[in-house]
Length: 290
Ligand code: 13P
Picture 1 (spheres, helix red, strand yellow):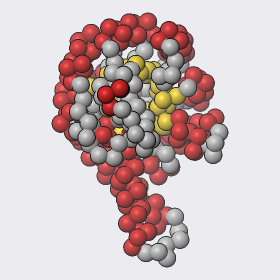
Picture 2: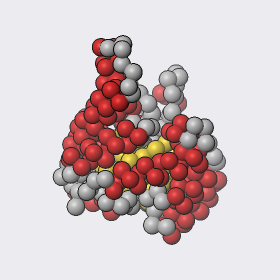
Picture 3: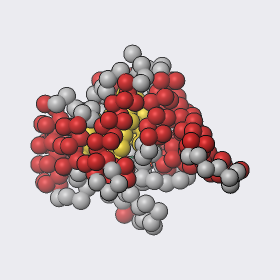
Picture 4: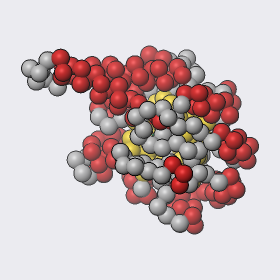
């Protein structure tokens, strides 16, 4: 199918009590694994790329990375019969505009280093452009840290404040809202509990669908309860890369004579596909393509 705007399925997921999986890719094989998993589960899915993945794929050039991904995402979506959205995860203002121009069907602006007022004004502007192009727009308030292996202070994480959230969503017109409930990007073990009371309050007061970032480090019990309360887009990255890299490492450890990259990337792709399938089932999204 051609790339789809995922908002209708995200809204349906919220109504029916499941969540759409949004899966990060850094390589061609990871992108393929995601759409093949969605196809195998007959589920809608979001294929997403972060700012750092763009820089990697574009060998240092974000615009080059966006062009590669726009092409890969389009072909990947057209290779399967289930709906796929192509999402820019944590984009800057110029990346969001370029992604929309290149045919991404969903974008996120990350204004976490800006003042509240600046964040509102840029997000609102981007939202108008996204809407006029039929693209789904996500933004975040509060902090889901990106420690990238460095130490971080759990007690100092800025969680989403309900009053500010209400104002932000109303002032910007965003389609989906990423909430900071205590999760942290990039953790390798499931060690985090979410602030579910905060989620309940935000869910009651904010009309748009809510998104969880940093799910790899969150206990499955809390993800399940979070979905029951109203999280309806769940981002997964590290957990998938762990599965991919473990399979590659096994091949290379087994045989140090391997030279052909296909010999280890193919098992990596298969392992990531299984990991995505498992998450799709866990989120209750299996069989929800239509
Ligand atoms: P994890 O790497 O913790 O799964 O986070 C993914 C994410 O939120 C991407 O935006």
